Length: 204
Image (tube, rainbow, N blue to C red; front, top):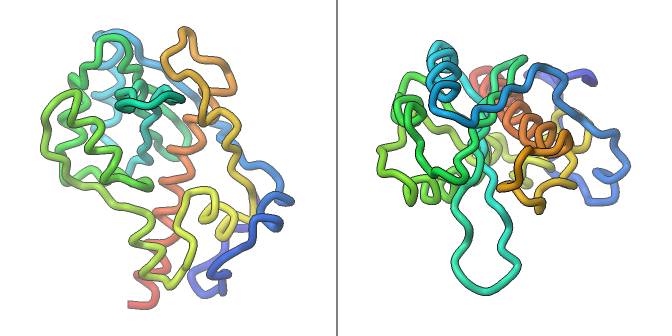
């Protein structure tokens, strides 16, 4: 990973698409674990409950026709060096993840969290707590671009791949590119949260 700016370093408020496209790709190099059954769900969720900050994201099978969107097929949660991919399709149950999603002491951070939570609540009702949207942190730092790809470029000077974004997230098994894409998105969300939170704490 490239040099991470310290809280005192200046960072750009925005970057143009051409600049971002020329940056090297960033990817997660830690362990990736996939949960597809209730036993693994319980085991991995119990491990995650011990971490105070988790990167968070979901994936849905894209719908290329008119009509309602497909429900979330995957929840990603990541620590500094581990990514946990919980497959929701075809059972569509959140199970032990609800305890994490409702725990205000466990920070879950990512982008477009309102939409993600709305989609998950279509599967099972829960009261989300402890969610921190990266866009709000970026706006507090006067950063104009708040998408995950833009924030990764601004803070890490690397490019987040979106090549697997529109792939079939209901397929079994997930491809290695899908697993890496899903893990990287959740992991980089956590890293960005910690960086921006440190900068906000520095100026406050």
